[in-house]
Length: 297
Image 1 (cartoon, rainbow, N blue to C red):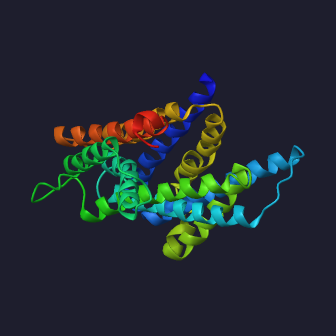
Image 2 (cartoon, one colour):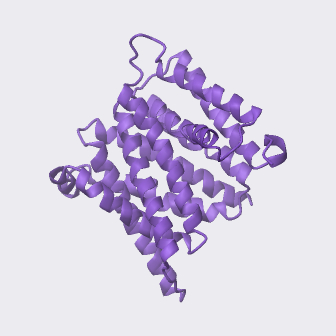
């Protein structure tokens, strides 16, 4: 059980590093869209290798319509998550962007409440209120002029979280119809195609011959290749409550990367906002896996 939890922690740590490295590349003039494209492209290559190894071991997989459909949805989530996250970083900081990304699933609950899909409970309503208060503190939108993050950065950060929720939704249902490597292969191929018309093609082509090529490959390995292998392998034997807690390694790692290596700063109110958001989201994730405690019928 313990080694599998370490794999989940390692995956979250790699995702946090990917955000920090993306900020570093953007400070060197690379666009968020190009970085996202290469992250997905390298991830696609990793999934192709993973599938090839499995096939060499004698295992055969068939692709069916439902697997492809849900994987396509997951791919849209991947493209949106990576791109909006990096845009949010470019408009603010790594710490603020990654925290906004983790807070966005709360807005899924709001939509579910309004649509009548899910019943609001006191725990969920208090959690939403705490997250909203945390966003106000984190972004500094209560001040007339905020240098923490721009409006585009706030919107992009939340959209990255919503896109992440879309990926999880698609990945979960696709997993009912086929193995994870096949799902990720289709998802990353979809993400690559979605991002292709949105990028600066000349800049994207220059990556392979630039001095930063190794950093792009590293972001792909950490953010979409090795990390997903560690996460999927570890998740098989890790309790949902444990996975929810250790997932917080990603925002902590990303924030520390920005603070220690990129000279980013957080004031006291921003740190309080970050603590509110991460604490509330983690608590809700834990309670959701315990229906009797969360009030879910």
